[in-house]
Image 1: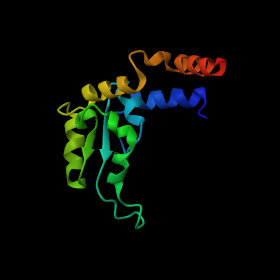
Image 2: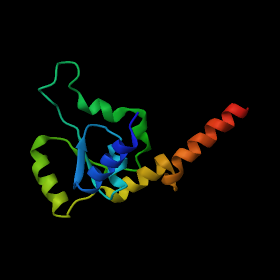
Image 3: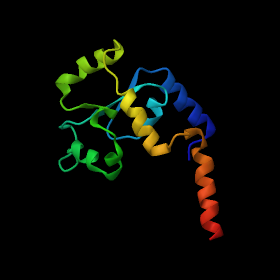
Length: 129
């Protein structure tokens, strides 16, 4: 489990970077909470071993069905677009934050700072049944 210090470090990273780039990670929510975009890499990775190279399969997992639109993250479908996309983010010409925030609210609800309390209340309610 992450420590409180780990969460503080992660929050600091989110606050002081321009965006996050990854493959199908929930870090999209950590960064959108800091008004930062998320790049999802969605193109073949030839350096990976055969059989685990289909990056796109990750975006078929069930939790991606909750995306309000494909604009909730910036999908990089080929590496030739990466440099321009990064430049556009840094220059303020491209962002996934608006749609990302809609997705974030779908996942955590309108009061994300109360998420832990709600989880404990639900567990308590289940245990009392």
